[in-house]
Length: 151
Image 1 (cartoon, helix red, strand yellow):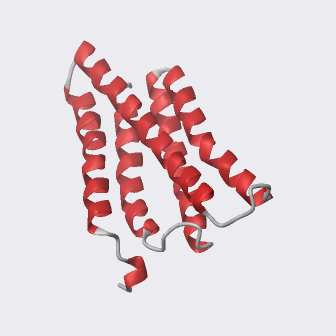
Image 2 (cartoon, helix red, strand yellow):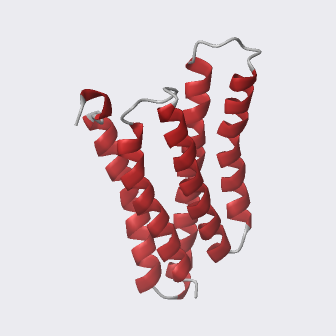
């Protein structure tokens, strides 16, 4: 693996640890009954919404630190794209649990495409896809699995 694709150890550890609540809550949603199950599903959706907002925030940070003119159309577009995940996260929390979890899963997968494009265009670190692809697979699977607990 070349140095440009080497994920910094702190990013790898924090990313991996950040995936644990998805796995734990999705699993809990399948083994718990009634109120505890609904708590696990709600916690999964809330955590998914927070992480989706975080993914958008990464792009806000990348946009405002890039050496571009403040009136650049590309900057405006990147800033707009960076706030969409927070809006989608909020909407997902307003939906019934199953639909909300599936919306979060779809939005996290869509953000991966945004991340891959940003990395290809040198707007994000070259190592970012190496981190994001496996984490996205885990997160999307956990959100879908959690949605399956709702019947």
